[in-house]
Amino acid sequence: MKAARTQNFWSGSRPRSTFDLPSASVPRWRSRSGGTFDLVIEGDGRLSPLLHEAGGHRWQRIPPTERRGRVHTSTVTVAVFECAPEAMWEIAERDIEVFTTKDSGPGGQHRNKTESCVVMRHKPTGIEAKASAKSQHQNRRTARAMLEARVRAVVDAKAASSQARNRKSQVGSGMRGDKIRTYREQDDQVTDHRSGRKARLSRVREGMVELLG
Image 1 (tube, rainbow, N blue to C red):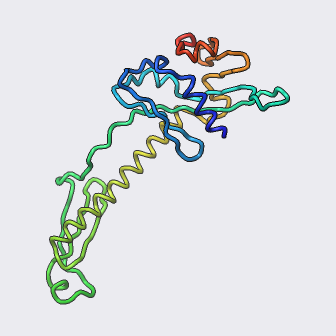
Image 2: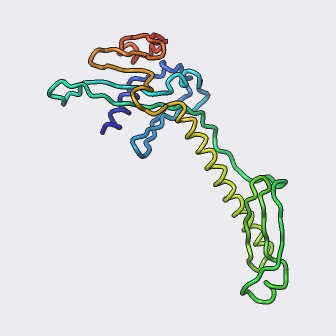
Image 3: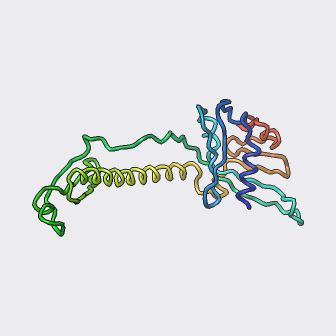
């Protein structure tokens, strides 16, 4: 429920004019597990204004269901990434070494006497794939597919690790000490802790974020 309210707050208070997005951009929310939401903006957008939003945002309000007038606080952490379109991916031929060998084990005389087994090695990473069916032609295709899958898994894992470090550097620990702004609905006030400036929340919701700069 908190995640849903947080999404509604941010989507409702961040009009197109806030980030000066081109008219071709179509912002849309995408939900993920763990209370995380992605705001995906497609088109030739301007990344610089969005980068200024990276960090921790503390949101304070008195919910309508709060009978004692207590202030509730939620924290939203924002990280900004530029997502390049995913292209077709394959290993360059110059990065592959191919070996043919005789395979041991069951399979008949043809399999054991001819060099039908194919081993492919990705030279930059040392990753290998082996296929040992009776047909060398089939083994080449199988080994190539296996090698590409294994190398791609390693590349994707490194990219995910790099993005995680980037996200961590942007949002910090998510604790109160790492916040960049505090939004107080009950006072109609926003405080930017980097500039020390304050503005009316209602005006910031209209897109006037420059009041905090």
